[in-house]
Length: 313
Length: 249
Image (tube, rainbow over all chains, first blue to last red; front, side):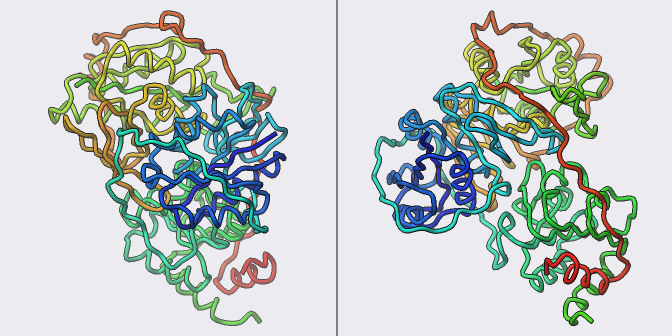
């Protein structure tokens, strides 16, 4: 078996989900090639070479690949994918955007968002917002898979693997990257944070989210949100945790003013410890919480901050 | 310009699904079905494009069992002009659906295909991207804002880090995300009118597409249950438990 992992990166460094995807490839077993396709992407390729488990880095460096446009990337991946038994990408917006286009070019039925590997052709994936787990066997010659990053540990570091250049990319002339508005934050990234403080409609305003940010900073936590809070405009879209937002599994998830719709639970119920703070004691979030506190969040959050400052008795 | 909107009939988003006892799948009998929420947003956006003069006709299409006609009628009641059912039961996998949609695109020659980013049953998030690959068209996934004119389709995409703006050369495919718009409800007169709008029936055979599955479902089971834990009544109690019992802070 030989496995191609498609790295997600910003040309200078790898995105963390790449490391979890490599770990899934290690579970499959076999030679692992990590493809870094970008523009001026030597930095990302150098980092890729030090990922444990990687036999070889394939680097495709072309201005057409700088912005990760699927129309330009897919033909390149198609041209090399047939040499492999498996092609893996992270189930992030990057991988979700790209891999199905490759699958169509290869005439393969992709397997999305796998959470476990049973054998080289059999995989487990959540369906219906995680309310059911399907085990599926692929009959295709090449398996194309996106990997749920929370289900696999991040790969460690090892001594540098060789980097080989690959070519064959071209500008498809179909799409153009105009710009991006990325959320800048000093806090840990949502998908890799050990602790997440997350707010829902109960926060009532974006100003009130500052309370959660202050609590998060005390805990070294990331800040997340339910769809309701994002739709209401309290926080940007990239805060959203849920079926169609980000899937997270931190050691500690503190849900504040979140009722716990199944679509939200789908994104966080694999967290190790869940705390729910909500004034509605009937809120469904309490059914999955390890620690539930029925309280008005506007009183509870300042008290919680205060309690964190004081040492345990 | 014509806009083609592929839609899907799924279990209503508010229904808690039940796994069948024989582990063959999820119970669909006597369960309330509805249009996939992302598809509603795509239908709404297409109707708005027609209302603002950027599209002449909105065609909705679905691939699925005969009952999917109800879902098409819902889209017609929202304001779509006509509908196509490609009858296939059970609904095929995303790759086969994309092949069927490619055949429909070749018949209908739309300038834009608008569809939901994922269906909330299989959660695959594949069909639009696959269709773009089969057609060799441009693609903008996870759209939260859309502008269409003759020369370009401008898409704001919701990505993991925030928002991304791209420009597509038409004809284009756009998959829509939650915050693109808020779909309208169909009015009673429009529901009545929708019954008379044209609905064409096709089959995979007439479109010449092989829809044999490539995946074999071995089993479908409930996820491990998560039991409710303890209640706390003060911040100090919560912090103590997180420190000393759970040991996560």
